[in-house]
Image 1 (tube, helix red, strand yellow):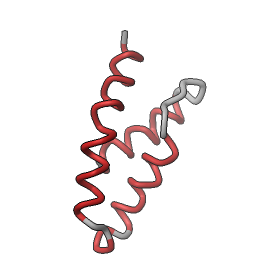
Image 2 (cartoon, rainbow, N blue to C red; image 1 turned 90 degrees about the horizontal axis):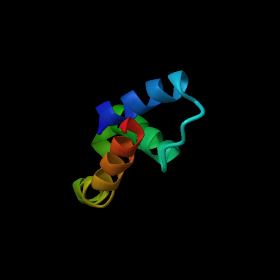
Image 3 (tube, rainbow, N blue to C red; image 1 turned 90 degrees about the vertical axis):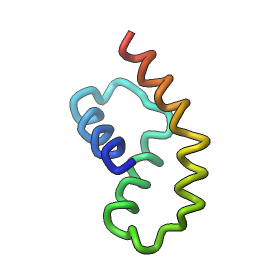
Length: 65
């Protein structure tokens, strides 16, 4: 998840006109993972992965078409 957030930060610098749903939340969560990892609840991380990873994957695949 940290790598996805980091990649999104770089992608938005290169292609600022392309919108990614929840981009701000993804990069904010990346920052929280990197800088405050000891304060994260594993159940929250699991819930985020379960709910949001597949939709993000589909969104990125659409951009690549």
